[in-house]
Image (cartoon, rainbow, N blue to C red; front, side):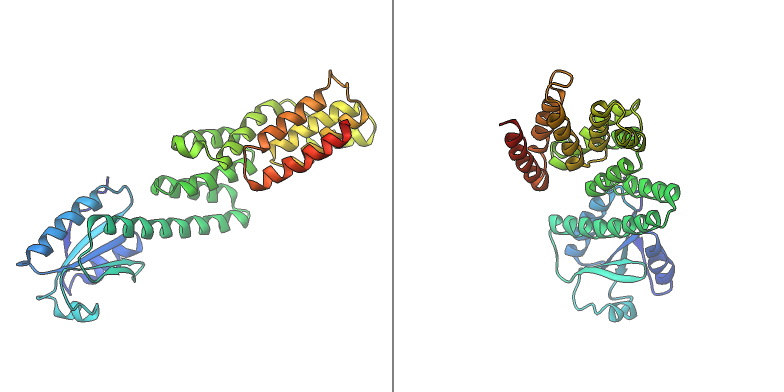
Length: 290
């Protein structure tokens, strides 16, 4: 819960209480008059609303009659009027009296934009090779903006890329039940489960070398398909399984055919790209078997 209560701002305190605070928080400014019932009612509504957010929000109020210079600076023509500031800039406003849901939607949008920008900056830091510090920053952002589920999913994807399967699983478990049922999240969950299977397998480089040296080729192809699955390289995994079937359909009691059918079924539950790939390889499998 946000613990910042309403702060009354004057011309003398504007820089300290609004401009400076907006460097680290979203500042909500209400221009009002003390004698207006609608102003006081709106202030109560926004105070309650701001307190319901975990994100860093600062609620301030300015007496439009007394602080005429600030009113002119913001072009205030009527009260109540609401302004939103971040990093010293005006990022949103209401020039009429909004209802509670409109205010909530505006706050959600501004917070989401802010969190997206922060995460993008951390991701750029990550791409520059500062992996540990970037990941720590991403975790901080995800924790600070819990309503932005998209960021959590993006962080899971990055953790999987870094092969940090345990961390990815923990973050995945924290997602809402409905989100866990989406195709993208199911794909990530599958990657994590498969990662447990590959923990004792040789590396992709070792398996590729074994195939090139004609050493235990079919088993190497089977293990290689599993490694590709963990990385989300579904087409490469399917190709290895097809090669097993082509070489020896009866290898390990038809393991190649069993594995490819399971993988095709899995791809059929995912997104459009994976479904198209599944249809393509169903046709290839049918041609190969018949």
